Image 1 (cartoon, rainbow, N blue to C red):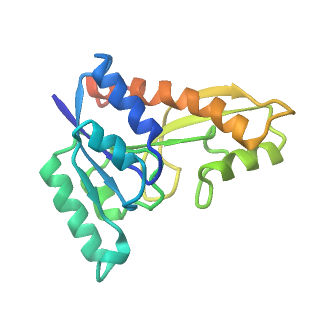
Image 2 (cartoon, rainbow, N blue to C red):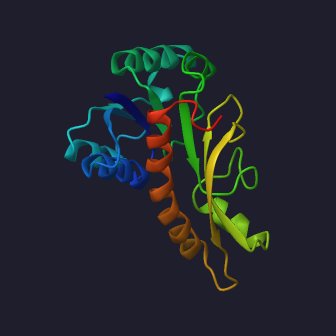
Length: 198
């Protein structure tokens, strides 16, 4: 069975969507562990509830970024991931990690990339920008992680309409519903065949 490792910084609803897909038999994989940079993040509670190991690693706890990267690589080696999934993880993944797991790290982003992606575009800020931009549709994207924020090859997207009456919260809820469907589906395809989208 293929190992998945999650990186998350927040409530972890996308993380939960994959836990649910595994427990319901829709996804043939196991989650080997969760890495977070925030001890108080609710994703850790979700992991504990399902007996998933958690490692809290914050760059501020290390003498240098190099030491942080070394520890990260050490943990990943122990967990032996087939796929690494970023689900609301707010730190940039270091180049040594991207190089070692090239093509095996994916991220879910709450916009139709390449629109509204890159540094500073996360969470509510994305939806505020979409509304300000007068878009008539938005959505979510799953992409391969590369050295540049949100610029890796797009694997799959889902679209949702944007209504003139939308608040950022309403739009976020509509997009999130699609994220919860899209992420487990993309993971299932990649587990079946890592080159599924090529």
